[in-house]
Image (cartoon, rainbow, N blue to C red; front, side, top):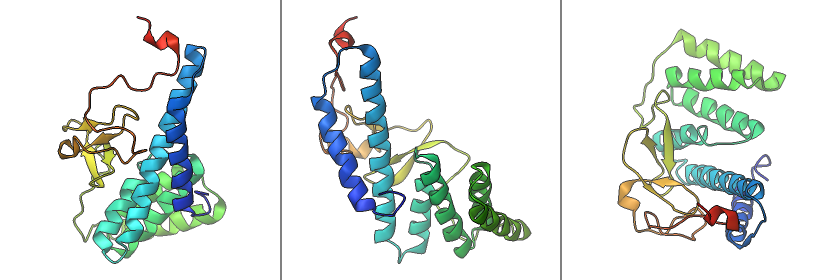
Length: 206
């Protein structure tokens, strides 16, 4: 569904996974680790898909749409989905005339070794960007500084800055979001004191 661009349907599917995981009971730590991995995947795609849906809502605001397109490329996605997100950001930033930043998306896309058509497009755009290595519009985006995405404010939480956490999924949010219900599954309160996911009795032993 993600590859086909059916983002709302995909989001509903990942929400179903997030709602089902707390009901799982497994017998070993290994299986518990697999459940945690599933939770991480569902969380990351929930955030990514809501970022992309938000971008579509603000498509008449080029600067904001560009920020969201950039954030989308920093979500933990499968290789094929990451390539599609980078191509989208590349196109968006080129149209915005933010050529310096656009070039970073081109290089990241080429590092993934995409299919020939996508690679050719990325190389052509990169060549054009390198001839005019400037950014026209100032954005809240620094590709050199690692960050998480607050999926309430849809803004970056750069490394070293304060955040509040969803105790169930581990999703991070801006401090001002503390006390709100986490939109990542809508099951827990951001910043609340909780044990997190426990799916195996062995996890309760010291």
